[in-house]
Amino acid sequence: MSVLHFRSSIDKKKLADPTSENARGRPLNYATTTRHSHRVSALPQDDKTPGWFYTSRTRIAMPTPEQDLKAPWVVLGAGFTGLSAARQLAHNFPDDRILLIDAQEVGFGASGRNAGFLIDVPHDISAPDYIGDHRIAAHTLALNRKGQMMLKALVEEHQLADAQLQHAGKYQAAASAKGNAVLKAYQGGLERLGQPCQMIEGAELGQLLGTNYYQKALYTPGTMLVQPSALVKGLADTLPDNVELFENTPITAVEYGPYITLHHPHGTITAKQLILANNTFGTHFGLLPKTLVPLFTYGSLTRPLSATEQSEIGALSSWGVIPADPFGTTLRLTPDHRILVRNSFSFNPNGAAKSGYNERFLAVHRRSFEQRFPQLSTVDFEYTWGGCLGMTRNGSGYFGQLGPNVYGALGCNGLGTVRGTATGALLADWLAGKQDTLIDFLMGSTPPPRLPHEPLLSFGINTALWWGQLKAGAEI
Image (tube, rainbow, N blue to C red; front, side):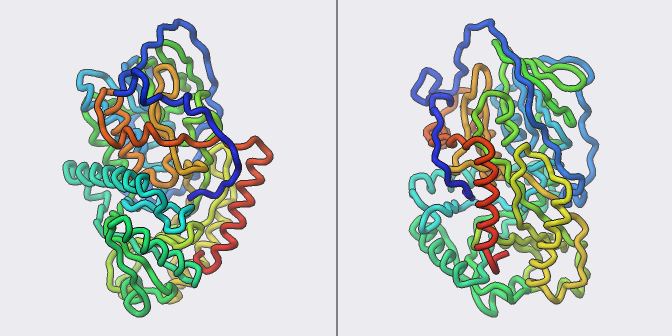
């Protein structure tokens, strides 16, 4: 989803050049002894009520380091991207010690706060057919499917039943004539891309989803659904032996040079190579210009439905609905018989939760829920939370070298589950000198454009969010 329309540019040379001597991913040789320090300007500060986290398996978090540590590799961020990067580094460098660091507890941050969709098909809302450039769309499809298959294989290998992975597909639903037009255009784009899809409407749709609110839905079978917090918890607890995980370890400062020294409240961590896999927070480490927008979206999760209530909402035991309009409402019926409602956006410039916002958007969730399921008007929400999306203006992210001995996979644009998983592993392969057409695609992609300065940035984004949500109308 792109909601910004400012003109700007960024020097592509700040990323690793795929035509240079480093084209196969081998780290460049920086023969320098100079060092400089940077204080990290923002840290994750999420709200305390993420529903997925508390309805998934309780685990004991790995402790903060009690002494100074050294390792060849340090990965920052234990979400989908960081977990994938650390796992693949361990495979590629089995004799190396790899440290995986997260500022919070695994499953508590952004990777455990999304709607739990592992989507395969591209969805470019800037294009008339929602597909756009077919070369880019084909690579995006391959990238998303790589992430899907990696996660599916890990769930099966480690028997992560708590992740509730289901190959259920998704319904992109419309409640207005405007939404119907979007679905028709997208159907044509998917068919031209050779991807299966089916338009469902009327009584059949109502019987499937248990609501007559929607006029039509475009069903695509390739999407998988998961309990996102449970999945990342399971991935964290099944890491290879040469990966050491440390949680609740916020990095407050970093020293750059021929080796990297990270400072946290209890000591230091020194690495030969640093990988930033912490999405929007990666831009606060002094190496990247301001290009990632921390947009928060909000979700509420009901209590489990009773058997009687379950019988009133359709033929399917589990489903996922995304809106025709990007500002509309996402819905999930989960295997444990809860309904998720997700909509509303805010721009939180420092990536921290804002006081009072959950209560404000809970009222919107209540209204959206009762419009769709008036028969469930007595069902209460148990949890409401916000989660951060790392968005860029052109839908592209960062992949490759960010500075001397520093690398990153950042900017997932709302597809962190699959894109983060794929790019994390591909970055580890790139660093091992492996070749892949998807690596070539990522290295050759146009990097995110620079954002304007304040106050223009906040004014532009907040205006775009207000206008987008207003235009969404019945889709919310």
